[in-house]
Length: 360
Image 1 (tube, helix red, strand yellow):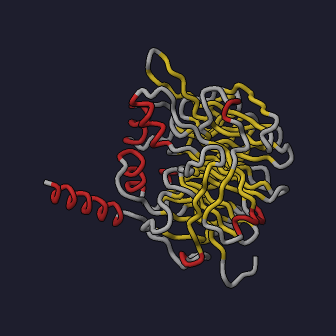
Image 2 (cartoon, one colour; image 1 turned 90 degrees about the horizontal axis):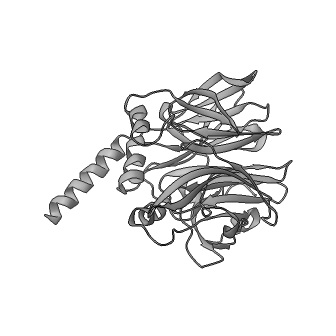
């Protein structure tokens, strides 16, 4: 019996791996240029799992990391645990990431006791002009003995000393957040939640997209809208995961329209703004593999990172790990000062890459 289970699991893993989309060319950072870095929560000594999204604070020269262990949280919620694990928003100095260290101990810059329903940050955005962090938080409340999750749009100062909550209640499928000028935008990955959201995936419905803070339906033409980031020329770049593309949106009055779509060698997750206005996108080479790992806990799914030029549409491969040797299910990446930092919503820690032939 155990042999059959093992063989079945192995065959399933090989099948999923074979479905992964291939990438052309050699990556800028080879796997030998990269190392795993374990992150430790300073407050309790826990290993940080689920570094889902990243942002860069150029003034303070640090990478902001939103993280929580979603598998552990969902498991505890199903079991009706008395308390549910929380995460944090951590700040990793770029010099520490360049140092070659394989373990970093970091504090959460946002205090857990200031967030209603617990701190479990998902998508994150940092505005250097406002010196403000905005994030989608997975807030949990126990109602009639059952834990229920409600996404909330939260804001904080960059050092966590002053906490500002706008009390925002985005839709149940809120995913990521971007700040453009004085406005805040939230992506939603499905028009509905639960089994109705599953039907959208089954029938490849284009029903997800972009809301504004307090305004819904600014754009709804994507299949599984995911990461969103403001570009240098005041557009919004939106990751369309199931379309395997990034959509560039331009404002048309009160709404946004699709200006351009750039196809990618994988399914994009979160997006960040890189040097020179390039878009850095973490990709899933196989939707089947990431789905199996996320929903069923099966195996490890590959990781890929690309750089996108919004002007000419050129796509450069930065990192390619289709067999998840270093990191499974990369969900966000930042490239700054010659360093590529990669996080995952499902794996432990982060990956840091530095080219040995380029002085940083």
